[in-house]
Length: 189
Image 1: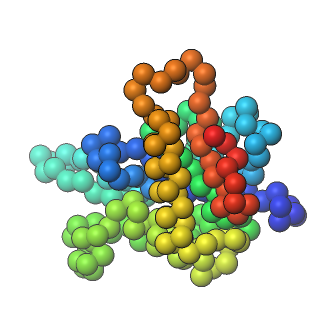
Image 2: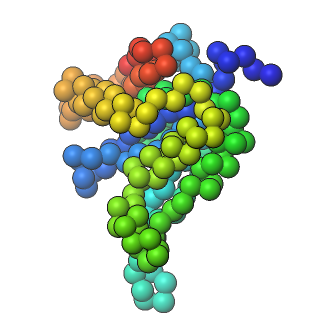
Image 3: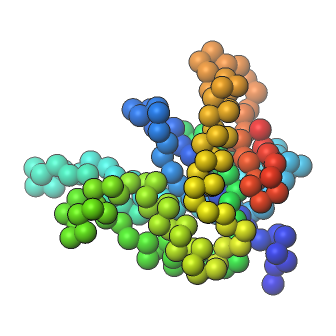
């Protein structure tokens, strides 16, 4: 059995939304524990999130929400990924995956109209994390308000520093910035 210190990590990922630059797309990632010393290596992950895409079925246009699980070879090559924040240590990946699979995905025609109206990638992440907290399959998990505040402060700080400004020298390979809330420090800039 792995020691607690080498458990895989659960990350909150914030992605750019080009059509809505004042907000972010939220996703959860599983990845191996990483340190600043491993910064040059690719960082594989499994991404969990919900997204809605336009669908045309029998000339009827809709935008249903879909849960998606996908493998990422290296998060540093992930399109639109701005930052990641380490939010917990995974005690049991199988249980976490089950929780994610059981977290409801609401559609506009769902009987619970209130939840359906406010459902989006952020509300799915909030619900999934609350379910994880109750199940105890992720250790060191902070409450949502603190997690979100820290993640948004982190990405906004990177924006103020000019991280994604046009005209930036892209000859040097930029790593995705990662803040580890467990240890309280940045592990990838």
